[in-house]
Amino acid sequence: MSKEYVNVMASGTAYRPDPKFAALGPDFADPVAPAQFPQARLRWRNDRQAARIGLGHFDGPAFEAHFARFEPLPDNQPAPLAIRYHGHQFRSYNPDIGDGRGFLFAQLRDDRDRLLDLATKGSGQTPYSRFGDGRLTLKGAVREILAAEMLEAQGVYTSKAFAVFETGEALQRNDEPSPTRSAVLTRLGHSHVRIGAFQRQAYHERPDLLAKLVDHCAEVYYPDLLEVEGEDRVAGLLAHVTVANATLAASWMAAGFVHGVLNTDNMNVTGESFDYGPWRFLPTSDPNFTAAYFDERGLYAFGRQPQATGWNCAQFAGALVSICPQEKLEASLQVFAVAYQSALRDRTLARLGLAPGDLENDLVFLAELFRWMTDSQVSWPQFFHDWFCADAARADASPECSHYGSADFRATRAGLLDRAPVRPQRLAHPVLQAPTPPMLLIEDVEALWAPIAEADDWSEFKARTAQIAALRDALDLPQTSARDLPATPRQY
Image 1 (tube, one colour):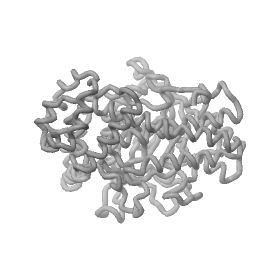
Image 2 (tube, one colour):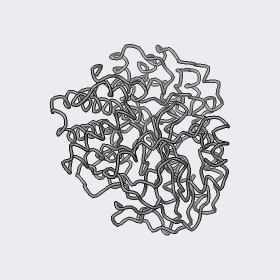
Image 3 (cartoon, helix red, strand yellow):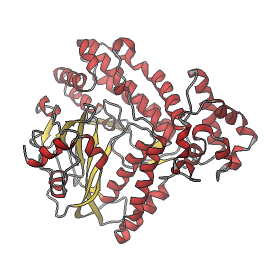
Image 4 (cartoon, one colour):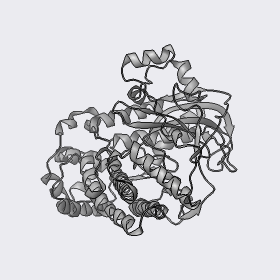
């Protein structure tokens, strides 16, 4: 092992490679070569996350070698792997997809001994690129950084933008002014095993490979499932994945976030939000708000995200019928509604800094709250800022205060004030003392991008990401998933 890695290991969190997915063999992925880019200009480096996985002390040349040229990390995967999967895309089954502009680069353990993936976006063509160039625009990389940072600040279980290099190519795109600048992104996440990976093996009628993938997920993500075998393990995995993704959908709803493309190849087995394309944050509450211009039917509109997530879990069940009886799979799917309701209560009240009470009463209160937010068209981000820990004096000094004195808000106001604040000392943080919160509405994102596009001026982007990091510290919301609270299938 080279001196640079010895120094990293001696400095704190150890670098601990653990390439589990590669051990599954050639039926699940294809070795690929990364693109050779004409330039490598570092635009984003996530030092906080690098420290968690033992890579915090890389110098510039080493960081560039591994995350712009993708030279293998020591004792890790010898070559990048383009993962094979299929998927329902806007509910139409597509067997001609897979990792088309990205690959799994490495796997390693974090400071909590969890297996994490380093994977890419924009790293070149693969066998699944079809007619694509395998590249990522710099604007797309910037948008992914912003989405992941803001979602993490709001307690959503999300992948992290680990590194972004501008790569010096001019790209042609039909949805932004072209030619446009290019980038390669490395994403840090808990799993890139997608629901579509199971669908692919079912499509090819390979129950042996389905069972192998189930066993892999049990070993590395849900080890309590190792206590059961056969059909019970399969049904247990479906229950875990269903709870994890129900929790994710609830987290998006609490954050006022619209992912935009909830295809089965964009949902994974750990219930982690990832792959940020046409995302939006709500300006005001609107169940019909749609992020993607090409989602003409509003299939993945804000208010339909829970339904879309549940539908995807049902497709996961459908992929497993050759190795588990349908009635057991249907029983596992039944956990979705309860898990979603519980998580919606927990995540929304946590975002408001308030303690939960009786679940049924809390859900009635939240239904009325969301109805009022939709009717009043109060600013979504401003409302959650104003009523964090239910400090009425603070809310009444808000730019939105006219909404809070209205008669139709009276019952909701009383419900907020009836709930106990959780760690109200957080209100002393300067971010929460400011009259308005950091926002990422579409006009904010475009305003951050404009100086980069026009003058290569990153100052506003850096200022906003620093504000979002401060918001993360101020709210101090835990990022938890069903994966962090394992339960046996019998408990479901």
